[in-house]
Image 1 (cartoon, one colour):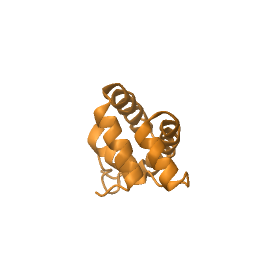
Image 2: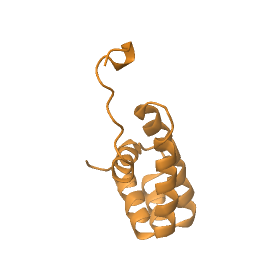
Image 3: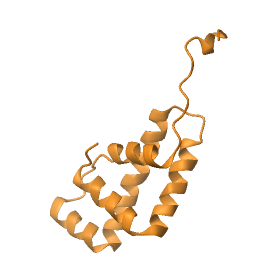
Image 4: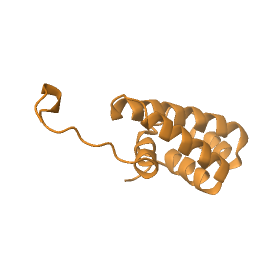
Length: 104
């Protein structure tokens, strides 16, 4: 999976800051535990990651420099959200065909 520069910057930051990684691990696992479709979880995490990126762009030099260079136009964090879900959660079991119809 390839990450865009903003996603890669965020992922690298999380890997080098254990407290931040722990926080996001918990957030990703809590989101994944919700009984909603995976697409909804990814969408929610993607928005949260973008907000986090904007917040970090006020306080972290590498994010500040990128923000000055690239601006603050909305950038997708979807690939990062999907990656974190894959790395930090157990895969959800796929429903058996016909299980919704009461057929097993």
